[in-house]
Amino acid sequence: GMHQTQGPRSSMEDRTVCKLERASGGFAPSHGFFAVLDGHGGSAAAEHCAERLHANLVGSHHFPDLVPALQDAFLRTDAS
Image 1 (spheres, one colour):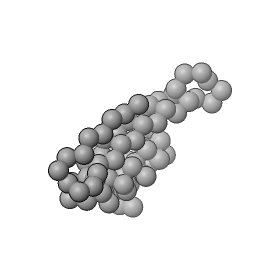
Image 2: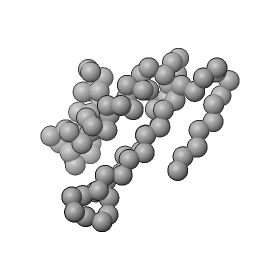
Image 3: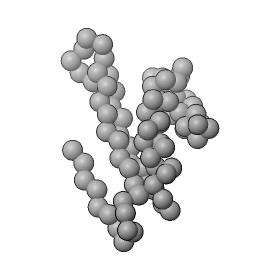
Image 4: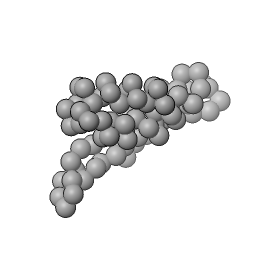
C-alpha cells in the first residue's frame, strides 16, 4: 500500500506509482517500479511522468541494465 499527505496547497499535486511486473509464466515479479513524483507548482509534470516513465523504462533497449535504461527513460519521458 501507500500513504499520501497533502500539505498546505489546495489540492494534491504529487503522484505515486507502484507496479509489480511478473515474468512470463513466473511466480515472482521480474521487477518492481515505485515512484514518488513531486508536483511542485502543479500536477501536470507529475501526471505526465506517472503515465509514461515506467513504459519508457521497460521499453528502453537498455532494460534491464538500470542506469542507462533510466537515463533513456527520463530523456524519452521529457521529450514526449
